[in-house]
Amino acid sequence: MSISNENIHQLLIKELPEAKIEVDGDGYKYSVSIVDDQFEGLSTLKRHQRVYKILDQVIVSGELHALTIKAYTISESP
Image (cartoon, rainbow, N blue to C red; front, top):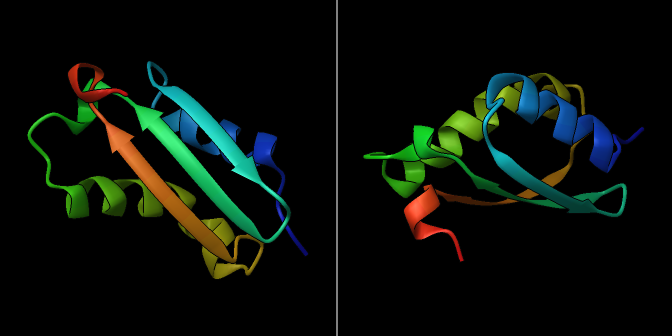
């Protein structure tokens, strides 16, 4: 059982509606890149915790197995 890139994107955009979000994955391992000023003033750990909290349901269910997170503010975006 796995989740699609679009499903992950929809879960994230629901909680981070102004964010620029890119999701890449193969049904097992996923990476997300999120640019949103809601990350302003947060450490990398806190940014990742925020993303994990949004995706908690699909992580706990086993649908999402592996996740790499890149979270930036607009001024930090690559």
